[in-house]
Length: 272
Image 1 (spheres, rainbow, N blue to C red):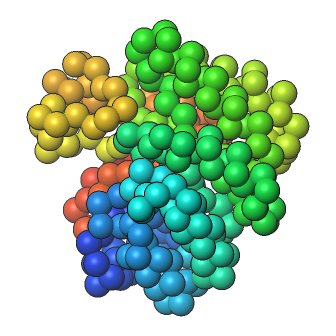
Image 2 (cartoon, one colour):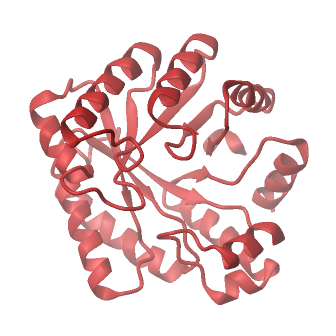
């Protein structure tokens, strides 16, 4: 089942990364996403790209690049560091796609739309980029801004994928996918056969629900029904998985899957 999914893995050092990658390979999981947060940023992120590129050449890896976490000194130095990252990724990673995110807090003149505008003049067109979209924003004005930002992002021909945030309101998800399907047809280059839509997926557990209620994730909207019942959160997530697959949306599992127990629980959940 996981062969049609992507799996995100987080780690603190190369030893931990190796253990998790070996576990994935043992489970025949070859499509990996590497986030850009916590320890995984700046020099260590470069080290990770080189390590995987040399030791795990057969993996299909998509790196995330957060302009919030990657900012260093000023926007000019930070942009040059980004271009350097693109060159290193091109050398060490056979997958030429990178997910661009502004980060939890947008930096002034150094967020995704600013960078996409600069890339018109500096980009090697062999690189593809993904951009984020949150279909679960509650306020109408926030939703309107999010839609307009996505349209602005899709105006750049090198944007080839959309990555959906996770949430619990499937009616909102359905509404925003209808919106996406309508606007995508107006972007000829994005509407080509190589374009993709990915959907974030979290496997619920008692531990996750308790942690989220104590410290909610910025930009992730989960209903009280979802948070107060493991059974309810399970049913909602299964509906989201079913919706993803019926609408050709590739799931990205963000839940930790690095032990036999975690893997079996997720596999049993998804196969139900």
